[in-house]
Image 1 (cartoon, rainbow, N blue to C red):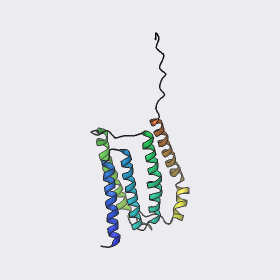
Image 2 (image 1 turned 135 degrees about the vertical axis):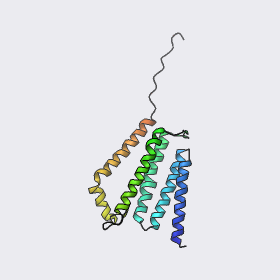
Image 3 (image 1 turned 45 degrees about the horizontal axis):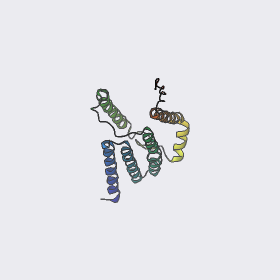
Image 4 (image 1 turned 180 degrees about the vertical axis):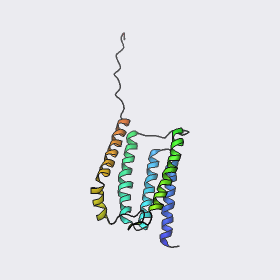
Length: 175
């Protein structure tokens, strides 16, 4: 076995263990920390695959900025231990078939379009100098819409966390 294969399997095991721990935790902060471990393991996988730029983005954007945002929102909401419920009928009726349908569609598209054209399936269009103009010219509108959606989510968390003003208690008469 080569060192790369051993490291690849080790990072995969860390990512899998972190994902299972993320689902098993009842405290939201522990779940967020497990997600950080998954993101770091994925960055290690990207490094082994020779995608240094994607690995750096994984650490900086996801494990850094997004997870800080998650932890900030969790602390803002003062979330404690989650309650266990039986689940939702709507989630079972629509979620399971929707997930299966989405997986089949993704597999169909990947199989249909794999190996066609100059770029293999799943590959980035080139170096960061090529990706930058694509992101900030051709895909500027989706990029900005995503940032606005994140801002709306933060504002919603602040509204949910704020306590409604309590009405003043009127003085008792006769005392």
